[in-house]
Structures are given as C-alpha cells and as structure tokens.
Image 1 (cartoon, rainbow, N blue to C red):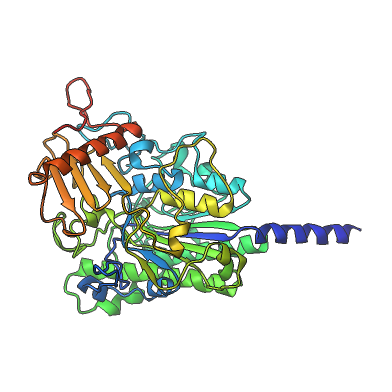
Image 2 (cartoon, rainbow, N blue to C red):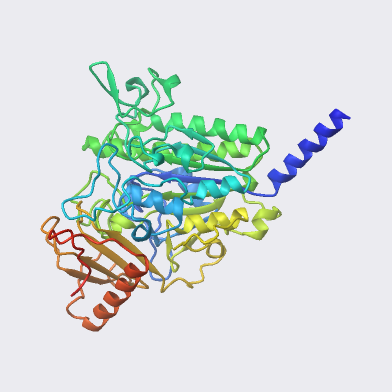
Length: 501
C-alpha cells in the first residue's frame, strides 16, 4: 500500500512539472546590441545588416539561439544595471520603481542634485517580485551570478529574500574583484579579499574563469530541479562582461592580433558568456527537457567596451553612445527568445510558437516586459501590482508592428556619463530632456531625433520641429507624472525640478 502511494505521489509530481514550461533568463552584464556576431540591426526592408563590430566578435552560440528563435532590433533597457534589474523583477519602469541609479554597496549614490527619496535600498519586505510570484506558481527559482538588488546589509542584498529558492554567487555588489579562481574571484590584498563572489569557495585556487564556474553551478541546480520533478525558473545573471576586463584564457588566442589589450580581454569575456549559453543549451538537451524550456537572452544595458569615446559613434557603431548614456548605444540591448529545442508537436510550443531565424524590426520591447511575459507563461498573475510591461509572447510568433507607437521611458535624475536626464521614445521619435544641472557633458537642453531617418542620433530636430517637440514634451510629462517620478532637485531647499521648456 505504501509503495502504491509513493508511486501515485511521484506521478502527481511528474504531472505538475509537465503542466508548466521551464524558464531560463540569460542576462549578460554590459552587453550592448553590437557586442556579438549576431546582426540585430536591419535595413529598411527588415533584412539583417552586418557591421564591423559583428565581424570582430565571435558568438556562435548566440547565432545558434537566434537561428531557432526570434530576436528584436528594438529592445530597450535602462542605461545602467540596478534600474534594469529592478525592472525585470517588478515589471515597472525605473521612474515608477524609483531605483533610478546603480546601487553602491557601501553608500547612497544619489549625486549632488539627485532626489533624496530614490529607492537606493532596492526591494523591501512585502514588495512584489517575479521570483516570488513564480515560486507561488510552483516553480523552483534559481539565481546565479550578479544580483545587485540592494546595498550591503539590506533586505534586497540577499536574492533569497526576493523569492529565489537558490542563490549562487549573488550579493550586493555589481562587479567582482576578479574573474579568476586563482584570485578567489576577489581583490586579494594583505590577506583579505574584497568583493570576492560568495559561495564559490570550492573553485578557489583553480585556473577557472568566473563565467564558467557560475555555468557549472547553474547546470547542477537545473539537474536538481529535474530530479525533484519541479519546473524551474533559472535566472543566470553573469557578472561578465563588466569590468575588470580580464582575459578568459580559453579564448585569448582568438584576439592575439588585437593591439589594445583591454579590448582583447573584453572580447574573450564575450566569448566566455557565449560558451556559457552553449553549455546551458547542451545541458537542457542532455536532460531531455530542452523542448519544454523557454530561453530569453538579453543584456542589462548598453556596452561598456573599451573602444572610443562615451558619447561617440564608436563602441556601439553604427549606434551612438555606450553604457550610462541616453543615446541608443546606452539603452538598446540584444534580445533573443527561443525554445531551447524546437518541436512543432510540443504542447507548450504549439501554444506559444516562436519561428526560427526571425528578426522583429518593427515592434518595441523593453526589460520590464519580461515580468508580464513570464507570468503569462506560468499561468500566474500579480493582483493589483502596477506594471508597465506587456506580454511579448504574441510578438515572438509574428512581428505585428502593433507596438510601433509604444512609449519607452528612461528616467535618470542622477549624475553619471549622461547626467540628470529623461529619455523618452514614442514610435519613431525620441526626446532627450536635460535638467538644468552643471554636471555632465555639454548637451542642448532638449534633443529630438527621428530614429528611422537618423539612427545614429546626429541631427537634433528640436529647433526645426517645434510642434513635434511640444507634443513629445507633453507626452513625456504625462508618462513621468503617471509613474509618480522623482525629479532632480534645484539645490534650493530640496525642491524638485520638473521638465519645462
């Protein structure tokens, strides 16, 4: 009788696991749209365009994933890391969740004129998060790699508090002291280690790169989920390719002729995360679950490749700018959605088909869409929690152009490479508004671009299109007010400075 009960219990677990697809979110730090051999940009007819940077980097496993899935030409993130990560977890734009700056582990990183009330401590107890909701829906939730959800000793510093069942290497800081196992993945000085990635002590002293160690640990955690017959949400958030730029020795010979060492090192790190993607896909196939697993690949902000000036057309060419800027090179990131192994007879894939080798060049996606997309996949919901994202699943199967007039809001009331600004896209138009602050580069107060006619943002139309400028300003202000955004201060008693012409 007891054996029969165990048999029925095992069957029920298998049925429960089969009811929901597995999910892998593969997030790369500081990987911009052009840091890959996969072409994401298209010509006016929607055909892929290959540019010199695509020929410089080698990412065969991204090519493999793109060949079996759909990629977006116009997918947006916040231009620095913590705001993007909070958007993925909450489904909200940074203006709404108010983690508007990257979080320093040790201190509040507001800037001279930043709003005092921005959510620098990250998520707090009771906040709605994606892993909590997926855990409630029956998923085993796994975090591996960079967290950067809150400062030292805060509630959000530990991913387990956000709803993850497993945490591998996630903590308050956003970059490791070292990527080398021989350095214990940290800065070694006077017998102490600073910013050493936690929980990976078994690799200390080994000649192993951090990217590989995290991949091995994630694959082991996925295997455990399969043994337990539970669907899983695997959030693999690599520290790479964030600085320090250290050579991943496995790929160093591919860039032996590159004279700039930091760029060669950066390129090896790109290949390292690409190898990680291939290892994850292979492992899913070996476990016999690839057909039931959705993979979403993306970057968290624009590139930080050590190539050219911050606001130039260089490291993101033909796009302008890089990480931390309000230009497309700082905000547009790679995004690929695919079933890990296409199978037209698979029930999950029939319900949410993803055609092979498609570039969606007409629709606009954003990092806060991940939240809604995955909740719909899991058959879950977020109650009264306000979201800014949409379910992208219908756009995976067919580029409808239905979001062609969609808005994207990037609000940054702090000082950084591009300082004290709001960037607002509506359809093909993009507005950049600069608050009256002395820091940051010397830009015009307002910049207005038509991104189809001027992809590299070289022609400011603010003065020649006053009617369109006024229309965009009004729409931006409505979006900011609706999100209850926090603004830079005037420096006079802490009063807020709202956008005005």
